[in-house]
Image (cartoon, rainbow, N blue to C red; front, side):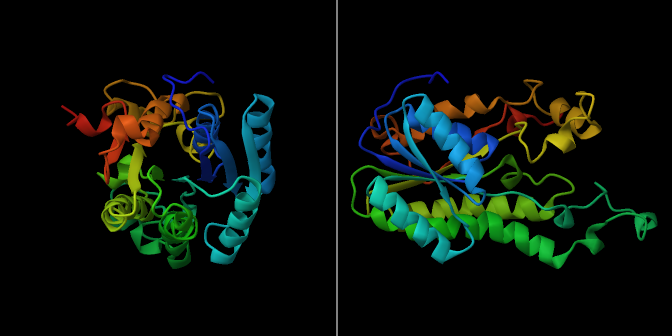
Length: 281
């Protein structure tokens, strides 16, 4: 990976949750190129270690750590490992999140004739909805409670949350995920105010549509062509394509660079190819 511009985060320690995924592994690799030590946290320890191994092979400094973002004890154990090996944490990227099929409708618009024939709003599973809200919201709140303790009263500490364009305007079919990401955006603003006197800045990135392991089956057919939902998404994205993971790096680096964004606090930055600007006409 080649960074779009250079910043110096040497002597910094960064924790990336959900670091085994497509976007967050890219975040971890980008931050490692700035000189920071990176702890890649993931529920799947093998996935986390794979990313860390790739960073180390390229000359960076990283470690893979198993952690469940929904369990404070697991996060505390991970923090102890990070502190022992790398030292006090300066940067937290709250990347863990996701959706659940049980919290997703089959129909975009409700029609009474679909009752009993497909999964409608009335069939959404309570446990599935709870899972989505917990994974996204609590999965951001709990790591912040644990790792932000290291950041208090540092001159250059930063938390980056991962929101979504769903938070601005909810997409059809995914009410729980859209609502959970809206909570992340709101929480980002709340945290920015709450920590404003501590030296910790809190901002968020809201990616538009990027191909990931999580959504690939929804957006791509087995033959590599786009699904009908992809075609609809692209028709509403003025740039007419999906984003590349690397296209999030510039925003990430800008938000982490104190000389460039030291007075930027509590914002949610869309990176969406113009999706949020387009009225459809």
